[in-house]
Amino acid sequence: MASILFAPLTLKKITLKNRIVISPMCQYSAIDGFANDWHLVHLGSRASGGAGLIIQEATAVSPEARISPCDLGIWKDEHIEKLKTINEFIRSQNAVPGIQLAHAGRKASVSVPWEGNKKLDIGHEGWQTVAPSAIAYHETEPFLPTALDKIGIEKVLSDFKTATKRAVKAGYQLVEIHGAHGYLLHQFLSPLTNKRTDEYGGSFENRIRFTLEVVEAVQSEWPSDLPLLVRISATDWAEGGWNPEESVELSRILKEKGVDLIDVSSGGLVSHQQIPLEPNYQVSFAEKIKEETAILTGAVGMITEAEQAEAILKEGQADLILFGRESLRNPNLPLDFAADLNDDISWPKQYERAKGR
Image (cartoon, rainbow, N blue to C red; front, side):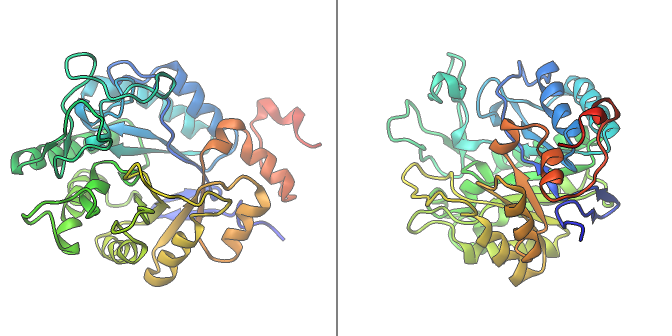
């Protein structure tokens, strides 16, 4: 019997050829937000390697939205040309190009990982960060983020809107809003980082307001017949933080607002989080959201084997499987997984002579 992992899935007018998704993974290899040949080879090789959907790394909607100075961006029209070239190649491999639009909030202005993820001083490659409240990620950071006022919030919403407009011009067929991993939207969601007393803080309804406004801003420019995803952290893994029950309720509302799938991750908000890392450690959250809201979900996190991914889909715990580090280790992961599951899938013609074991 054919596997579910290699069965197609239709999201609005887009049909993915299989359920294998390359998770957005920062490459920290851009200059002034511009993509280059590293991104073409990185994303393109995963497309030729057989994945159904390639989601580009967290792409900043403004310069201050970047995690590091080396993040990809889509805050100016000049960024479009190279992104369009990459997307054309991805589509030539019968894969779907997606983009994750992001704002790092208080976790912005840090050095690249191989230089220690250190907070960069303002004026020395760094910049003033923003957040819902003036609370730093680490107590030792040299400066606090600025709490966004109404004008600042409106600017972020406008940045997401214009970034979406550029994403359409660049040829993306799917957009994902990054509301996870301790970045700006997540910072508004969690009471650990949101201490506001206005309409954006306090109650659940107020804390989700900014996320819903970002969704609305993106939808105002994104074609209604193309898929819209939201990535969330289902739990902060910290006492008093955002929790799975709130994730279910938010997902229910997002479905009502027209979001097609929830990409379910976890953590990343606070440095004192306690994550029980083990295979499938986040899958139960995807399952809970799917069962209680009937929205489609994606599962991610320490999923490394074909049979493991197939079991998640077969048991109805999720609808897509996103691969991060495992796809970094093996760009041809889908080709190998098909062999593991005895599925006969098409290979790039240039590689067909290597098919079979």
